[in-house]
Length: 206
Image (cartoon, rainbow, N blue to C red; front, side):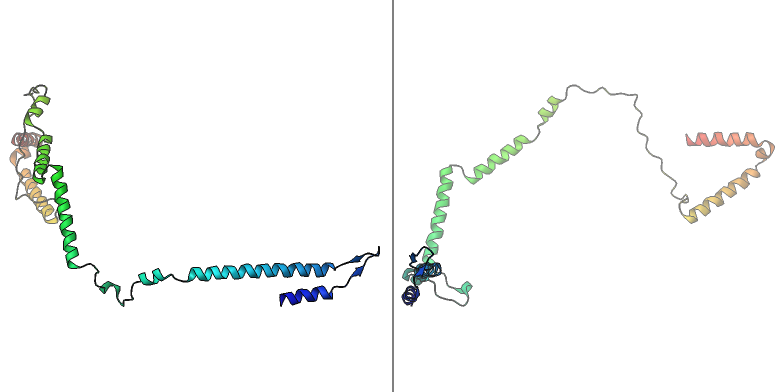
């Protein structure tokens, strides 16, 4: 079809005369159509070659088909391909390797534990080291105040924080005040009686 189209373009082209009397072989329009047709033919060939390469690459090889695993409904329930004897052999080899590595080191685990324990004991402070750090004995000062034991409070005394305690304190103060007013020494000289009472309270506190 492409060759027929090109032949039709060539046959339909007629020579055209110019002003100088010279003849042109083809018109500009027919030449452009001819170049487009040749380009189209080359692009079609390259496209077909690319499609053939892609189809070859997409086809799976025989080795890949043989290596594909069979389908299983639940892959977690698949049986292991390793036999029991192989598992036991692998366990024994790992155990022997671990024993060989421990023997190569030349130190047992108990010896390592003893060394660590000894190092920890050496890190602890010794009594001789503490005594060597003390430069001299600090002199005692006898002028320091002695410890005074706190006096016991009145267990049956009313609590001023509570309402009932405040009432009891007010009642006691009223009774004391009435007793002072009825005292004959207070009636004769109130200031002397007050001075004597303060002195007696100070002595009792000491």
